[in-house]
Length: 524
Image 1 (cartoon, helix red, strand yellow):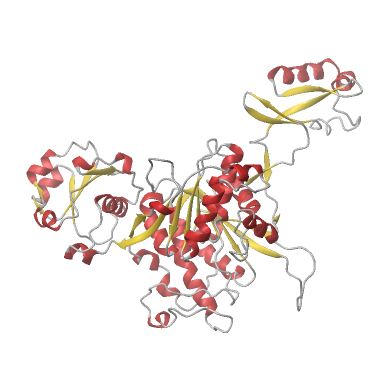
Image 2 (image 1 turned 180 degrees about the vertical axis):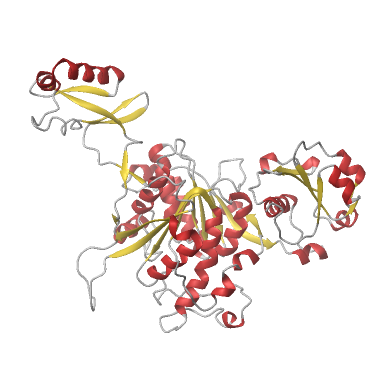
């Protein structure tokens, strides 16, 4: 497979592995929660902070769990004012820090690729095995992005390259009037990913039966009876005889079809089509005008607060296309270049539309994360009194926790007793780094120092954010013998020190892991 080469590539291919894990700090006054509830890492999240750091911090709880990712990164047009600030240990790249990337920058494509590669690598780790990622881009970097994603995701996992019509009409151009952007789609594992689906154009009456909406497709038999141009029950029976009458009667008796009386006294045989399930595959050209994104933002009284917001219709179509095949619609949707918050708006609108329980995670590094990104979501949830849209006027409902990135999990800090993480933060960290699996706080038994159970291990953590405790706590033979039996699984026990023979611990299927420790994974 052809590979792309650029300045700094050797330094950033594995850079995401060296990014330290950070703690999350909830900001309750900026959150929007039901009364009596606290922000949770397992609910809707809006994260303010560098997206590379945030994506790494999400791994212990969301690695392999995100069903759908949408990102709209800088297009690198030279006019966006973005800055390369990743702390890569490379002398050349350190000269890039803090400098705005503009159209005169001869290394702007190299910088953009160095920025994108580690983020795409972490996004891939966060995706579920059947998940997909959508990336909006324009002509400036589309061809380079395709090559990067071929390397990061695998060229066999390429799903589609959509053209998104964003503008109509004329305009000023030296060569050609441009009215479209690109949308690249990749799967984590294309053999497990279901095709993107979209609802068919409904042409017929919509009825409700047993709480389910159906549309009555009246011309489904027209191909078979095209010679007569009819789907009328009486004419079908007349021309096709008793056997066809019996077949149609069985379809009616089973509820798959109904008869609709027309003005001429004849009855049409209409098929009952589940409105939520009936779908077709995507066409490669999507029409979602940029002007509609501006109107969407205006509708929540944030006119002029953000340049080039994506239209809600585009995000709804993409998310619906990925999630409409699921029965409970509880998928997790991630946007790590959140901007004005269109992705969250789309998720809440879809949940209102079909009763789904999709969750969103937004990451925004800019200062407007609260005043624009989160504020838009607050207004969508509460409602906009003067909105012409009845659903938006009443409010779409929902909630979210607002988070800032806290301290990094640095080994030197733990050694020196400074900035010690909470028990829950360290439990989340050690469980993921040791097992490679997601941690569930619900399964933790803090009183017994039990962190959780993975496919291969039971994990224990003897720790308190207290220097005196850390200087005295140790894994003794007596403590090891008091642990619950593990059956066939080994037990990983994290503690500051041990006073027990490794052979004795091994006989009890216990593997000691010293705190503090370097990042590693026990599972190969």
